[in-house]
Image 1: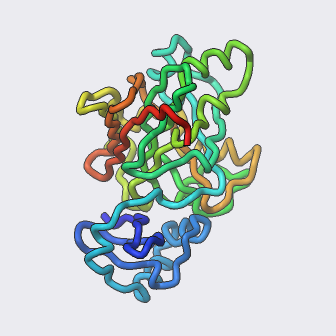
Image 2: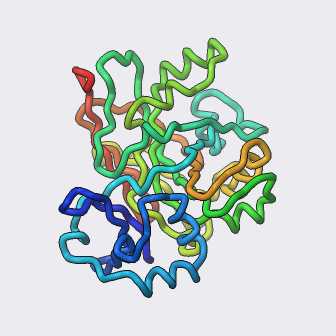
Length: 285
């Protein structure tokens, strides 16, 4: 299965690599820029990918082993709330009858292996939330589910870290969830984009989350209350979605607290793994 990942060149600039195993092509050398709005349509349309592959160079050995970076900055980063019935029930709520969605600001996202930073002043439990993330590859506005399904370019993994006590406080005051979801680094993303056409059906996919090797979350993605195309269709009624936008698709049951020194791993079958250490920042940088 070929994927698209972003790595750090030894000279200090990002490079896009396309491939699998030890066989990778340097798409940056083929003229592809560091822009998810440009890359998403390439992942969506196989004929465009073929054109880039014909121009790309085989990646040098130092690139294939380079550090993996956050796979691009999205235009909009949106998230679904309570998209698994069991997750809603673990907090004492009935599964929602309408789609719940909110924003994750692009500035707070981070990449694979980057530390998730809990600031010293934050007096709140912080929870992991393992999720699959969809990449929009075509303009979607008032789009049907079929149009949205055809417009999903790729998927990757995400972790929607949440300041849980703060979220509860905001909920009691009828405030939005914006601040509890948007502390710096509270949105790891990666490690690479998997074209949507490469993934099997939802009932064959399982998302997992481990903390220090202990299994915390595990669920078939067949348990989505709203499938990605259904969620995107509803959101597109309210705001236009553009190539390069992303949607976190919701987390299953089993969310729980993390603390300084923990290592959190999110995985999708054997296709991808996203790992991030947790660090308590005693002095804000």
